[in-house]
Length: 356
Image (cartoon, rainbow, N blue to C red):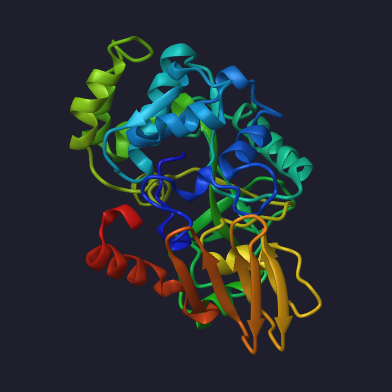
């Protein structure tokens, strides 16, 4: 899934060039390139679909030249995660009704890719198990991240404690308050919802037919033309008609056999500037510097990102985000990072759409 705008990473991420197409960490690869390579360790290149907005097709072509145009699924409108997942599932089902599919956001950062592959393999094997009946008892599996602190910006998954690698999900909780998140951590049987899902294609299609029947009716009408030259015409006409809803609300919170694999890998959703600060190596003053050449005087805890080689001088600045783009300079306290969307909108209103 590569269709989001990534507005919390403004001014680097914009509507015309969102964060998944940036080398956010200065690692030599963009987030979508890292995601593709990570998945390609278990999934053949020719079986990977890229779901993105129509306006980003050129960026996908440039950054993932090995992906055929027939495997780039173009959304004419933003409709959250449920519709694009159903669209992909129907396309896969037409090619291979027995397929197992993984759904992964394109903008996550995972260092320990070997552990990610092992956890993903556990989920694949669970969905493919001969012990699982075909039909309503088939598994819907998600990868859950072990919480490291009471984060209030993530959804949480409660699961049954057992010795099994794949655990039964009890409930999903969307973005709790701080006190509730503290209780979740203390209980020990909660995971962050990473938005990475694994299931048999038939199972997820059946779930859409059961829980989101109107969406299923609209998009399944394209089965005769999916994977043909007429597919995009159908998608362009019908996709904007479907409900704007996430896979969590639309399917997983209603499903009867949802399971979680508690992840053994490190993870960041790269959701905002402070998540980038948390992931990067710090200097002796706890500053994170990306691309810039910096002189720091009595300054600590800052995140500085500029174009390559720019000289930055900080004096008496603590716990700030400094992001320099060619036409915009953003300077704000780290504790105010959730206000980026507000600042972005003010710039849009005052100076025009081309800056956001």
